[in-house]
Image 1 (spheres, protein in one colour):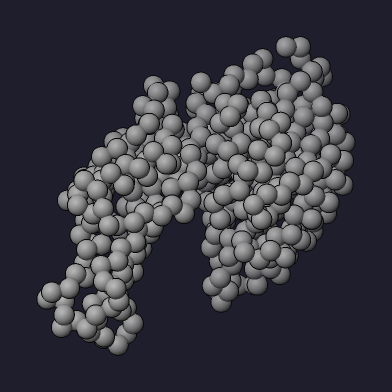
Image 2: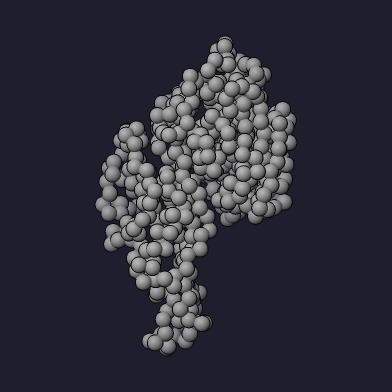
Length: 466
Ligand SMILES: [Zn+2]
């Protein structure tokens, strides 16, 4: 492929423009953050979608809005031209701000103090999304025409499972065609060291339901009537071994074994991370006595099986002598490539049947596959290089985020590689009260993005994910 960008950009001029525009951009972020676009608030989600559409249009993007299944709209904006396309994934919805009393200043009255912007969404994801657009504007003004096409896919349902994203992208299959994609943000640790990963785990959320009686009974009858709570607890007890590790046959179905490159990344990880986990949660040892590299490998490659909560019978403060007729539990499973959520859930069904619990019903609430790019892929290496340059500290590599991002929906069909990129700090309090972003990190993320787009366009090759 011919190199679309001849001259090396004048980065000092680019950086000077970023510095000059930062106050105006910060005000713009404050404006965006004032929209309380929590999942379930249709009006606010609509306002945030409109704001996003208008902002992309103001940047000169070709904008389209897609709607399906009653979900918040998917806002798409395209800028630039070139032989390559970079998809930028983000979202305008935010996690609920409650409990409000734990916020120093109200979550939707964004405050700028101590060099930070404080509001719900400050990092996740409005404060990570806007620098990516600012970078493209600054690139055009300080460097020249964009060296590639950049497509923003901004959804409004990320914090509630991206359940309609596949249907929205199916409306325009071209939206899945790209050479690479950026995950919604990027991470910088407290020491200022960027951490780059090429994907995220998938997730299955499901509920178990069991009814043993037509209605609740007087507890004197419990000697002859089956208690739903007891039966559900007995069924759940078969899900883990004595050490607390998953014991459902088939939970690993479809899993790809780790590659040497992935194992090398885990092998290079700092074992002190494990001490931090133990200290944070005040535990002496991990489940099953896992230690060292084996524990790090388990954290990345193992399929999890987690009990979120269970409820049955009477749980109020005052006792009540009742035998519950029904019982519920909610669980989640974090999956890895190439596991199919429905196949894994079928293994849970078989497990319950085989252990004598065919009466325990399963209902699926959410299911997203995992998507990982090899850690030695050129796109991941480029993100690491530009992040290291801006942060002034060598980036560390990981195989996957611990959490879930909707990259399989965007990337899997065409095996598009993806990476994190950005400057979300470990103390940004995403999803928690007092969410914030440092103004200097808005600048860092913008400068990383400018360099990333330039380097991405210059790569000799951008291979598909094998
Ligand atoms: Zn997010």
